[in-house]
Length: 107
Image (cartoon, rainbow, N blue to C red):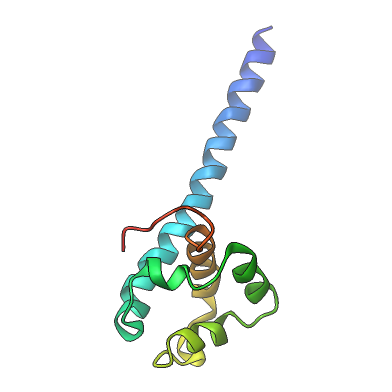
């Protein structure tokens, strides 16, 4: 019985780390948007993310056109100015706060 309880507690601890890591990407994406894109886009993160639904953002990301879509929404932001290391975090941010998500970011 003690082994079963220990296994359960270990599993719960592991799950809490996984959910924290997932949240960190959204937070990092939000910070990247605030620092790098908010001023040239001239809109809040909420308005930017709400340009598409979660499904639309996912299709854009999976097709490899994420940087180009940012450029369409914010013409002052050139696709080559967006670092590849930012893309996953920015995607997590816009997906989390897409128009159909019901979530609103604080930026």
